[in-house]
Image (tube, rainbow, N blue to C red; front, side, top):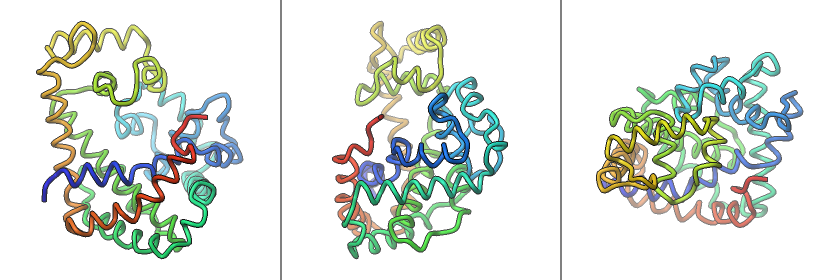
Amino acid sequence: MDPIVSRQCWKTLEPVHAFIYFAPEAQEEYAALGYDVIGNQAAGYFPARAAAMGAVTAGVVQAAFFNFSAIAVVFGMDRAWEIATPVKVLAARYRAADRALRRLCGDLLDSPDVLEATTLARTAAGGCSPEGRPLYAANASLEWSEVPHLALFHAVTLLREFRGDGHIAALVVEGVTGIEAAIMHVAQGDAWTREPLRKTRGYTSEEWDAAARGLRERGWLDEDDAFTPLGAEVRQRIEDTTDRLALPAWEAIGEEGASRLRGLVRPLATAVIDGGGLRVR
């Protein structure tokens, strides 16, 4: 199977997972548990994404999430499991997913296409293996919802974290650190700019400048912190490896199944995007 299938599926399915990081319903649910999401927005993100792993330490979270600073993770995980258990946080996350999807997708959730998409996505997720994939493995241990759109959200989460775990492996093989990965993401020029990403990942300007200087010394960035030909080559190699490592999921349903899944999910993904589901509020 051509690894491009991995990238195509990721791009189409991603909104049906990523909305959970922007939905006001999520912040409301986490606040109801006692997290100060107004004073510390990271207090919702870190525990909710990490909860599938159990009551893990900030160090484990930083290792699994990879490109956040230690300070950002410690701040986001401050007293996290004293405030609420991982089980309660997970329940809140799925309540938020239910509410947000109903708001963003409306009657689309009642379509038989959702059930078919869920079956295909679940089969694809079943083609993944847990070895070396901590976030996938953690989420794979959770029970499946009987509500089709929540089961679809869960399946897409599994596929997304499986790919993400593989992406981290590809970065590590190339000797890229977490902060360097963030800088390279900016150099890609397709989404983030420096200051928003630096701040959300919790790095100081001095840390960012030092890491960028190191990438320039390796010949990967030019003086404007854009990719040199060598840097672009390394970045492409990382992306190609990520696509290849994600293939087991899509091989489980074949190219025809993967194409069908994209077609079934596309209306939901479009509704999420058009409804502002991926915008910071």
